[in-house]
Image (cartoon, rainbow, N blue to C red; front, side):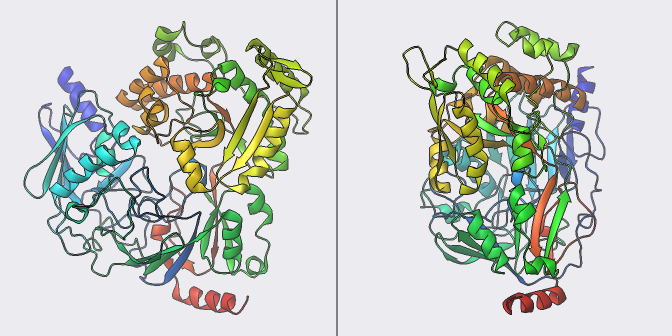
Length: 627
């Protein structure tokens, strides 16, 4: 029986074509998926959602906000240039559209845009894992090269892993804690030895880590911002830059991987250039002027009213609503429980009672959004109704410490008529505050010592002020002194890295199969790790245990049970005031691109687009002529 279970567990991790019955047997595969099996055969010629004949060439200009002072995105210090890792365009709402891991630095695996938690060999040729999941090995391409011609070897992979653990952002140490050690076997094989009970997604996480050039970083202090362009193994190199103002990536004509199945039809632009703007409103004006080719819009008012200009009416600019099928996670007003004011969950619940989402959706968002009701929204992992017997079995050991509502009430948020006359909700909020020891005196909410409740909402972009100010005004009706403070992105990152804030807007992005990121979000270790994503300071025994249950769930049904139980605890602890969600991406672009016609699960991936020479010639001529 134990042998059968071990084999079944292996099926959940490796994308296998056949598995031996012996639990000690090693399975060899060309890809990894967390639950299920990959869609594509071992000899697939290219991803099915790309155009393998996509033309190469053309220049694309994109916008970034703020500034940058480093080419090292892996450390806390400095602000890194966009485009080194991740998709070209940041998508709003916490989702992760686009399968690209890196444009300068590549990874062992390349994720699929149209599959759940699945990636295929890229720097590697095959992946090996025994049925007991005690290790995972990657066998590398012998011809893998960095852009300067140096071979990319297993030693680079191992060095990268150790360096990110030692010097990287705290999230690396949290997510990779299940690795006991890493060894190399010759130049082309690297083996990660895993701890018992390690997160089932860990092999996929390891495969998607960037691989950095060990020899190039020799003599450089990895913990410091990097002021010179690095080399990598990816399709692009940094060809020009003005620190803090612009950076240009040029497609490497000698890119070693250009003919791999994971590469064909992707990375089609000859040049990608980023211009850095003070904020999103300035970036939008640059787009209207034709200085920027494409942008993702995350402000509903701007999407509804800000794109009525001649180029749109003439068809020179395309507005596209792209539906995705991704979990949207949680977005909300995050309260820092390290601050005394938000240490009491009754106060946090009162903040949620006072937020009038229906008014905001009608007056600020043009009715576009739905209310976020789960940390796993747009997913079957979201808790609904009352917990069933299996969920209660996970929750019962913590019954004495959890709110009774976790067990006997479906989670609900206030629903108003949207007219802004939310007196019943304010009365409930005030009752909660009074239970927490606050009283209204002389129109001020004060504690036992007569001190008024006051806090600041910290924001990284002026465009969020229109969302924060109405909420702050509502809270002032309760006698709370609320300030709204906007800082530049670099300062915001510094303040939140050090948990030096009261309340802020936070997005917890989530995937179909939660992985080690939930440890960085909500574990006790991350609550004390500077630079982690655990901004609320969650450190709760029930949450800690349920994180383990989620990460160790052997199949989808048990994953649903554990995730829903975790969801209930997080919701009823009121760490965030839930805001809004959508299953659409808003993309606006000058009509100079071609792209695959078939929709993809991720909704959008600029890496699969290309510059259409005919469209570009017409559109570029019109906009340069002032059209």
